[in-house]
Structure formats: C-alpha cells, structure tokens
Length: 462
Image (cartoon, rainbow, N blue to C red; front, side, top):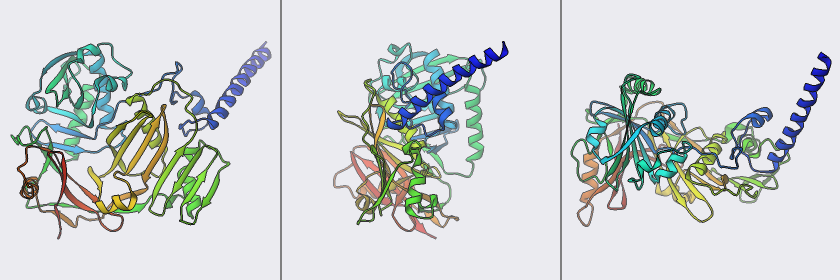
C-alpha cells in the first residue's frame, strides 16, 4: 500500500516538474525578470502578471522621505528602492489607513500636519489618486478621495499606541485640498513611531532641515524643506565616480556578462562583440546589452509583449523596480525624478543619491553622455523594453574636506540678484552634488524660480 502511494506521489511530482520545466523553458524565450532559480521562479508570485492576467503593481515611490521630529526640525532622506526601511514601514501604515480609515476633505494646513512626529513622502510627479491606490491593489472607498486631482505629498502621523488615533494627510498642493484620513487603532503605527524616534537619535550629527511653510517663507510656491546649520559652514565629504562594471570580472567582456546575467534569465548562449568604437555588446536573439567607453550601460528587449492588459503607472513602476533590483552593478541609491507618458509606454527617470544628498549631472556630463539623468527606463506592456544607465558608483571621500559656506538664504539672494525681472515664486531649492566624470563632485545649490532652473556655488575648499 505504501509503495502504491509513493508511486502515485512520484507520478504527480513528475507531472508537476514536467509542467514546470515547460513553463520555465517558455520563460527563457519570453520576457521575465525574476532573476531567481528554478524552484523560486516556479513557486513565487513574482511575475509581471498574476493568475488573472492582470499586471502586478507597486505603489509609486517618493522622491525623498522627510522625517519630522515634532520640534520644527526634520531629516531629509533619499532611501532609494527601499522596501524594508522607512518607505516600506510607511507604506504598510498608508495601506492600512486607506483601506480601513475614514477620509474627509479639508483645506490644507501644513503647520498642523508637520508639527507632530511624522513621515512625509514627497513625490517628484503629480500622481493621480486612482493610480496611486492601484499600487496597494486598489481601495473600496475611492470616492472618498474624489476631491483630489493629484497627490504631491503624503504625511503619515502615527500614534504612539495601538489604540490611539492615527492620521494620514494626502495633499493636492495645486488644488489646495487635502484628504485627512482618521483611524483609531493600528497594527503599524507603534512601529512607525519607534522608527521615527530611532531616526532622531541616529541622525543627531547629520544635517537638519526646516520647513519653509512652517517658518513663513511665503515666496516658496509649496512647502519645501531646506537645510540649516548653526556653525559658520557645513562640512561634508565630496564624492568621486568609480566604475561599477569592472569589479565583476578580470576583463570587460567577463565583467559585462557577469554584471548583466540577470537580464538574460540564465540563458547561456550569448554572443559577445566589441566594435571599432570600443563598444562592448552581449546579446541573444531578443536581448542586447551594450557598454560604452563613456560607462553608459544600455539594455534593449525586442520580445513581443504577451499581455493584452493595458498597463498603468503602478504596474509599469512594478516592472521598473523589479528590473533595477536585477541590475547587479547598481550599488548607488536612486530616486525617481520624473515620468513621461506616451502612446507606447512610460519612460521613468532616476537620479543617484549619496549619504542622503541628491546627485545631479553637471552640464558637461550631460553633454558627454547625452543624458539628463542617471537612469532611463522605458516600460511597455508591463515589461522593461529599454534601459539606459550611467554605470558608475559615486563614493564618499574618506574625510570631510569641503565646506558649504553659503546657506539657503545666501543662495536665494545670489540667484535673485541675477534675475532680469523680480521673481514671483520659488518652486524648489535643493543642496546636491554636481556630478562630474572625473575627480571630485562637490555640493551646489539648485534653485527653481518661475519655471527656470539655476545653479549657484555653495562649496569652498578648506
């Protein structure tokens, strides 16, 4: 009897393995970015589609995460594609609030929201509420947010206890409206509050920020967080670029194959070529990866999308995030800079960040690379079709040898003094690294005034 049962189990298992093998073989010919082994790919839900031919989704990530300590001081962080850190913890809280809380449309009152311990997600694009909700699998009471035209910021105000009242503020800055969501009792609030308290201790020696709205700087169009320090200057470390591909092999071909192996789903029959311009290529029938002498990495996928479901922002971003995780040579944190929509798909743009400071391309680097941003990803039909990245890591110098000698007020005055006509409003003011292809990249002020961009000096060598 036992032999019969074991034989039956064996037969079933053989059938399962046969089906799985056929499925896995098919995946090698169709696009799939799982990058895991056979059994993981077969039993995991990490596919572009679920069992109902619907695209999987992910909530759009913010440009940065601002941590408020309830004392008019903040930390501005660029956590990258971070599922387990602040973004992940905050997203769990947001999902719970959206699905269980009670929304109410109110006039926006930033001072009230950020005067408490809070987490602020600041988005680089205007996100349609329906698209954002899809990132959490949709919500039942979407009509409760119908007053919002777009989402610019989300402010999470968790309570310290499991049974206390929690708040979530979903802000439409242009429309001047906010949906205030209330929920008494939360599974995630206490952990999020603990994370805020821990961050305040961990960031004690780091740069602190203040809110322009909270401090009455009305020339700013929206609420902007600007750095402030008490000493005569802010000391910091410069960053230098390092090649991220070379460390994967003893020669460029080997390094490129090893660094991009996840792009080919383990497919071994690849062609390698170096042309007369010094461009290295690794390819199969449907996928080609190129590496240029300028350290630009390019990926093209020519397979036909098999899914007929129309993609949306959240499903395209899911594919985007998944692909970034499969780039083994990507070691620098990234943040979403913008999204461009067209009839064929969505183009996502990312920039680097180091030590919670954004890294922006200098004009000379933009010209050299013919790129405005560090990463460009084009998604069509829920799959990445084109990927372009400046494949270099920006690494902090071992010591703080630079000083920001101009504070944000000085930067504002410098830019405005050079304007031909008086400024109406300032859209943004950011301290970030001005990336160059060789040598040290230093901090500079980036300012947006009446739709125009300005850069002014901030650093001086000691």
